[in-house]
Image (tube, rainbow over all chains, first blue to last red; front, side):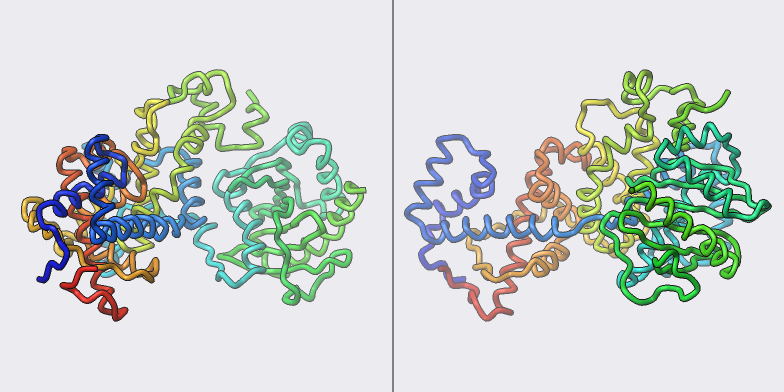
Length: 300
Length: 211
């Protein structure tokens, strides 16, 4: 190695201080010594410049990544469902979960050696239904429809709200004067065998929803409204079955749930159900024009 | 008794309502306020999600696994939130859990593939530092970081990106402060050395020739 212009002892000592110098960790005297040396040694000044540059660039490069929204949703979903013990690490310390461990082992055997082949950890929570619904990043319509779908799954299914039975007073109190009239509109439009069991405001992923749940036996229908947050359905791709008071309606399906959505100037409106596609279209066809009119009147 | 209206608006709050507001980290806000334990946890812990994810991603090197490990970290944190002392450093607490989860995971799955070097083998310091090219991209830097053995990479990330103090890093990783400092020094040197090798690729900075 050629050490041109390298004053071995002095430079070596100064360079051992450079990282601490960058972090302001040196004593005043040592700092002065470093500064004095840097003024006269181009090579050490170059090294300092490079270390500064690398540190800055490392920070910038790492901070360039951020957690995907889906991860945030998964975590919030877990927390809001309450403490869920039984994950591998905590569970192994407790003898009373022996049975759970056996169940995990049995599950692992049943799943074959999937984890081995993928290298994925065994201790992760299953992805909730709403999050397991995949939407391609380019599918703008799907992403908007999933806003309503997620709230339906989160509220009606995960939190069993579809099994509740609210009184009119409870609905009015939760919906507030702005939206309580919606219950009457829905009752008037829908066939008698659909019962409005819940009308409330709920929150999911920092978004507020006006949510009505209708039941007909095992069929669960959600009518969900939420204020737009910059979403606009892309032109084209609307379902042909309906123009809700002039507003095109879009459709999708995840798992066994059908989703129909439309937008007004200020709102996204969704109908989600476990009915057939035709059944869901019928409900959307029945409700959406009325909801559109309701929102127009409310705005006026 | 009918549930209170806020529970209808946010049904998950029913848990703490039904439990009569059990002991929680932020006592008074729970006893007299409307915030549930879950909300307290979200407020304290969720702002650090990006920091935890980025660190996990760079330590593990795989996006899906990093997501799963961060999710596990939050679950562990949530389960032990009653032991978290309000007013103490929530971020440092979460990082400590993250590294516990990461180390456990790595021991389990990556034992054969992870390069761990003895801390004693590192004092082969040469003061000469080959030049590092000017036009490095972020990807170059991340690729170089990935080549560094895990125990050095962790310390570099915690110190130079997340800006934890030596003492906090020592507590997070469960190692002495002296070891933090020596690993940091070694890690930075390895990173620089790796980046200097990009010089050849860019046709600059011939080795063995100082500026």
